[in-house]
Amino acid sequence: MGGLSVLELFVLSAALGTDLFSVAVPIGMNRVRLRVIVQSAAVFALFHIIMILTGYYVGHWLGAVVEHVSTYHIDLPAVAVQNWASALGALVLAGLGLHMIKETRAGDDTVGSASHPLQGLTLVMLAVSVSIDALAAGFSLGMMDVDLIKLSVILGAVIFAIAVFGLGLGRRVGAFIGERAAAIGGAALIALGLHVLWTALW
Image 1 (cartoon, rainbow, N blue to C red):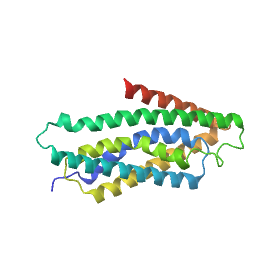
Image 2: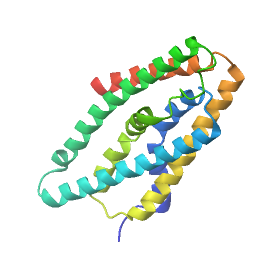
Image 3: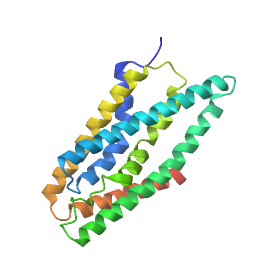
Image 4: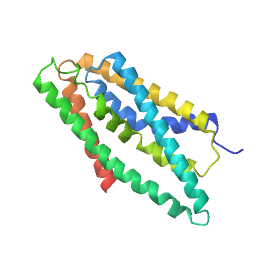
């Protein structure tokens, strides 16, 4: 049974968490509570698991159906989905950044309170946008023999840790910077969103 080793799964999981970390730090600067950080980290981990398993089963199905087709044709759907989702994710990030800046201008009482970005539909869209790489990775893993339970546990644990660390780091930076932390975090998200959009389209 030739599959990925535990070390390889950890490396893969860490690589898939890089986008999440770059987003988590500026969001954490919005002074979110520790309880929200833990809950959000669990959501991010869950969506990464769902995405990679979805990609795995679709990729496995494609591999079985079109075994005679070249790798180029098998990989094409993953590339198309990833580009589309990356563009959508970029808009979500930019919109979230604008929201954080708007809340900062509205007054400190609204920043970091019930209006924090890590809730409801915004959290779901954010989780989807940062986990889309896991979907693409799942397509590739679908062509291999992988222990899905081991993959899910390791990926979930690593993504959870990355999210907690990133959001926690942003929270500390936000407390150090003070009142302008959310605005700086919002500007960082807008810049990141524009960069992702540029990469996806060009």
